[in-house]
Image 1 (cartoon, rainbow, N blue to C red):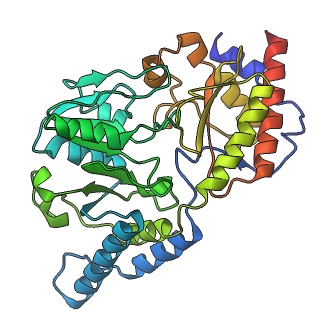
Image 2: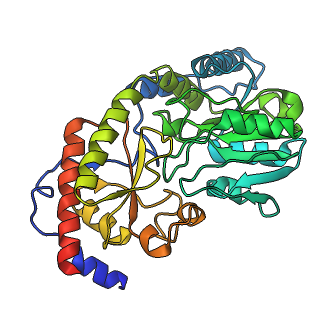
Length: 366
């Protein structure tokens, strides 16, 4: 069916869901709202406008604040190694993947595009039908996500890292979706992004167990990254992490409530038997394409996504679902729901009502 027909079918009609003037945001895996604590810290950092690399008094004050933020981030994450501030997880991954002293040997088939773009010659590690990796025993650098950004499936990184080390390798974990939500895994390098847990956009970090794992490139951050440091972002990142991780228990209860209601309404849960991040779920609405779903939910004031936020605008097929063996028709009917600190039980109830309505209209059209 062509896009014009999608729009015609999904044209706005008066529904109870559309009557609400309050937007409902269920796309926290793409980016989370800036926490008030992080906003205050960001403003504090903007007042410290000097370059942290400058030798004068103002520069030294900015440097002191930056190093304090570095230690606060490490402490909040329970990380005892080194930390390089970056512009986000994509840059952190690029540094780890291209400047490790070991060559990139293997990546999982369900990695984020930020990893895959550096992995043309690397082996692709297959996953099972639940999206889980079982083998990371390679002698070079291995890159595996902690939790998948499309399905929420959590990899057993501690076990996989042990396999890599036994084979003489190292493991780089993309923790963009899990940092600030789950305890960090026992990886050799870890990439994180602040805007996924309530910090500001434009700041992230590469956590490294030992500087010897990386080749320096000159510039800032102990010579491992070039560019003036983002002090306001670093302060906001520290403040967001210090908010704590206890809220994910509530998120798990909300997702359970959501999934019970959706399955009762005919939905299919992606990877229901795998360990999954409490904040992310992927669901199939049989007979209704994700393109139609996105249009209809958006018309109801509800923000969700299909696949990764980096590619959902194109609505192209998901390499993650393909690697899991999901056929193209079924994968084209799957959307992602991701909840955050602000999500309420009433939000879940509103979305379930909208789902039933969209699914009912889809069946009527079919």
